[in-house]
Length: 375
Image 1 (tube, rainbow, N blue to C red):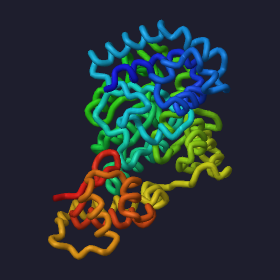
Image 2: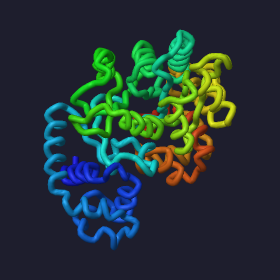
Image 3: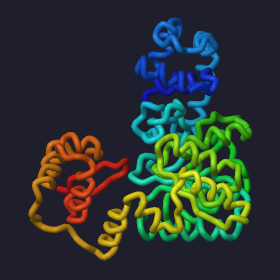
Image 4: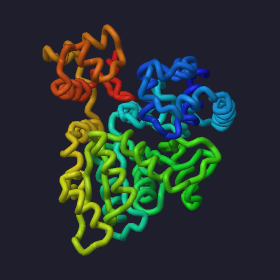
C-alpha cells in the first residue's frame, strides 16, 4: 500500500466537504492525491473551477492529515483495508462515477471487482411477498450464476433478507454502511455482519466515529449503485432509499430492474412507477434477470462444470480462439478489455470466444474479470 498516497487521499476526503466532483477534477488534472496536496497553494491555477472554500481548506490540510494518520493506524491494527481510488483493489465500476469516494474502508474477503456484481434493495417495511420474492430470486440466481456478488445496505427489510439469503445459498455478499467500521447499525444485524466478513464483507467511505445520520444513508446509496452491474428493486413505496439507489443506477448507466406488484399495494407503488416510467425493466424471476443481463453463458458454464465436463485434450481451435491463446501465451492473466486489444477481437465477439475456451478447459476466469491460460 503506497502509504503517502493513501494518507493524502484520506486527508482530501476530510477537507472536500463531500464536493467529490471537484476532487475528481483535481485528481484527473494532477494524477494523484499526493500531487494535489503538493500543489495545494496553486490549485486554482490548475483547476479554475475549484471553489474557494475547498482551495482554502486544502491550504489548512495539516489537521486533516493528522486525523487521517490516526485513522490509518486504526485500520491497520483492526484488519481494515484502506482502498484509495488509484488502488487496483478499489471497485473499478465505482471509479467510473464522478462522485465516487476518494477512499473506501473495507473488511472482508470478497473480490470487489469480481465478474458479476448486483445489488438488491427495497423498503425497510417489506411484506411477506417481498421476503418471498427476494429469497426465491437469490436461490434461483445461485443455480444459474453462483459467482455473483450480492451487495446491499444491511438495513432492515429487503436489505437484510438479501444478505441472509445470499449466505444461505453460499454466495458472497457485501454490506455498504452509512457509518465507520468501528460500529454497526442496526446492531441487531451484528451476527449476520459477522458471517459476511467470512463470506463477503463490509464497505464504507466513512471514518470511525461517524454517526449514522440520515444524509449518510443517501450518500452510501451511490456506492451501492455505482459498484454494481445492476440494481434489483424488490419492494418500495412511492418514496424511499431503494428508489434513490435505482435512479442513481440509471444515472450511472447501470441496468435497473423492479419486481411488479398489485396497484393497491403500498410497497409496490415505487416499483410499479419505475416500470411505468421506463426507469426499470419489469422482472418476474431470476431467469428473466439472467436473460436480460446476457449472463446465460455463466449458467451454461456452471451446468457443464457441475456435470464434470473436463478439459478437451488437443482441441482444434478456431482462428479467433487461437488469437486469444496466443495473446495469453505472450502475457497471461489479462482482463477482457486488454484481451480485446492484444487479440484484436471486438468485445462482443470475444465474450463468446472466451466462454468456449473456458468450457473446453483451456482458460479459466479469475477474480477481477481476469482470464488465465491453463498450462
